[in-house]
Image (cartoon, rainbow, N blue to C red):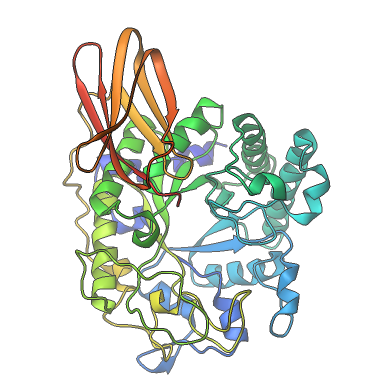
Amino acid sequence: MWAKYLLLSICMVFALGVSSQDFYFGADMSYVNEMEDCGVVFNEDQAAKDPYSIFDEHGANLVRLRLWHNPKWYKSLNDGNVYSDLADVKLAIARAKDHNLQVLLDFHLSDNWADPSKQLVPEAWLSVVDQVDILKDSLYNYIYGTLESLKDEGLLPEIVQIGNETNKGILLSPEDNKVWTLNWARNAKLFKAGFKAVNDFESNTNSVVRTMLHVAGPSNAEWLIDGFMSNGVTDFDIIGLSYYWAWHKPINIDDAGEIIRTLKFNYPYKDVMIVETGYIWTNASNDNANNIISDTDPDYQPINPENQRKWLIDLTQEVIDSKGCGVVYWEPCWVSSKCFTQWGQGSHQEHAAFFDFSNNLLLPGGIQFIGHSYNLSTSIDPLVDDHAIQIMSNSFSGDVKIKLSYESIDTVRYSVLDISGNRVFEGSFVGRETIFKLNDIPFGVYFVRVLSADNKTFVKKIVYNND
C-alpha cells in the first residue's frame, strides 16, 4: 500500500506550486464506441480523426467511463449492440491507455442511469435488496471481480468511483427509489463494502487505485459528505462533485469555488474535483431527441462556442484557485447520430458537445479549456475565518444541518430568510448540532443565519430546488 500513500493527495502539491500534470483535465467519453458504431466520424479541421487522439493532443490526461451492471435494455435498440457493460468498457479503456490517458471508472451500480433521483439496484440483486449483509457481499465481489478482470488484461483504471451521484444512497429497491430515501446505516454498510473491495484488491495484487465518492450539486456536498464521514464512510481519496449551471443554478462559479475550499478546509486529506460538468454552445437541435439542457449563466452571453469555452476556463481556474484537483466534462462526444436512445433518435446533448453539427471540432470551443494557460499559483488564500459553525443543506431533501465544533451549553438561535430578507423559519438548540427540514416553503434561494451564544453571526446561502 505504500505506493498509494505516495499518490494519496495528488493535489497537495498546490501548497508548493503546481503544474498542469498535477491537475486532472478530463472528458467522459463513454459514448464514443456507440457513436462510431452508429456511423459517426469525428473530425478536426474537416479531417477524420480518432476522438481519443483529439483529446490527447489538446491536453487531456483523464478519461471517465461509466459501467452498468447489465444494460440489457440496449438489445431492443438499433442493432442490439450493448454499451457501457464490461466488454464495452474494456474496449474504451484500451483506447484510452493507447493514448496515455488515465482512466476513471464510474461504477453506476445499476443496470441503467443512476443519478440523484434514480438509484435502482441491478436486477440480478433485486431478490436480496432488503438483505443488506448479503447485498454488500454481492457489491464487494462485483467490484473486486471487475478490477481483477481488468488487471488481468492490463486495463486497470487509475481511479474508481463507487456509485454515481449518490445523493439518495445506492442499490435501492423500486419502492424506496420512488421517495427520498437515505438510510445512513444501510448506506454506510454498502459504501464501506465497496471501498473495502478496492482496498483489498490493492493489497492483494500490489496495485494502486484511487477511490472517489460522487455527489451531485456543490450546495449539497457539505451536508452529504458530513453524513458519510459521521457514519464511518471515510476510506476514500477524492470527493467528486457534479456541477452544471442548468441543474444547480443559482450556484455560480464563485459559489462552487467557496464550497470546494470549505470541503478542503474540513477534510484536508481528501482531494476535491468537479467530476461532471457541461455547458451548451447553442440552443439549436440536430435530431429528434429532446435536449436536456437549455439554461446558461447570464454572465456568459450570448450562447456560442466561445462562451462555452470561457465558462469552462473560468470554472477550471476557480477550481485551481480553490485547491481542487480536476475538472471532467460530460459528454463532449455525444453528438447526433442515426441511432436511438431510450427516449428518442439522436443525442440529448449534441448542443453541449465539443463538435459542431457536422461532427467537426469546434475551435474556438469548449475543448480549449483543457489546454488553456492557467494561473497555477493560487490567488485565493485558504480559509482562515472562524469555522466554529458549519451550515449544511441538501437541496433535494430540504434538510439543513447546523453543526458546531464545540458542545454549547447555551442556546444557539437560527433563522431562515428568503431572498428579500423575510424570516420564513426559526428555531434554537443546545448542544453540538441540530437538523431541520425546509417544509411548506417554495423552492428557491434562502439564507440561514445562526447567532452563537457569544453573539457571533454566521450566514450561509442555500438552495432548495429538488434537483
